[in-house]
Length: 347
Image (tube, rainbow, N blue to C red; front, side, top):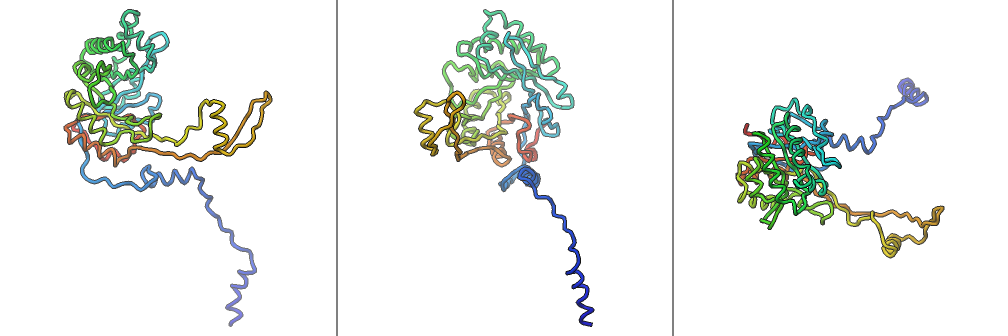
């Protein structure tokens, strides 16, 4: 009986082993995608948000026409501003966003105009060059299928301050009832001869959208894009000047990183040699023309700041406590998607 009992085990040991199929190992990219999916897009342990959702009269979202695939009309936006029409080298309006990208959106739509060339802005704003009248007519024609025009002109020569204000007055008149909104940088005090003078602009426009972000920027020291205290100070100043019914506080949906040393750039000979010493390079190679070439590996420290649902909800509640009922976001598609369960609209 003992031999019979051992027989099956002996047969298994002496026979062929069963094949086992291992699941293929995840690549680093696959693992990252899985973990992000399991944690609603976060790679870290989320801070718990408690309390009620914040409610606003208006929630504006800025969107890029070339990234229209990021538009989600289920989010609680009341207004979408489509970025951006601009100027070509001849001072003509070009790249007018296609309003049909927002055809299924039930809220209000706005066409954005922006131009990052101070020279072009000068030539179209100053009437003496003969471009302004046609430029204004082009803008009015471009917004015929929109509910409003949003002016985001951040590069205005100082001497065109008066021309900018008169241009805004022209647009308000020519839009014939459509909404004129103007984006302005964050301020905490009145600046003499400010191109973005809050009082003057708010007297003209229907909405003044304060870009309350870039407290720290790409070339500044590392720090929050928009700290809670800084945003509160910007809001406090704005409320002393801009009527609440016109004030829209902008919030960032992006982050920034800084490195402890910039390894790119143009160098003096002395600076290049300092880099060699600092990184242990003791010899150079030469190309066919005799130009010296070096290679070295460098370890850098990266510091980053970004807003997520937790920090944005704190800003929502701070603005609500100050009686602010309109906010905007730069920009659609960049957000922590859990954000939307913490915001409601009054409409």
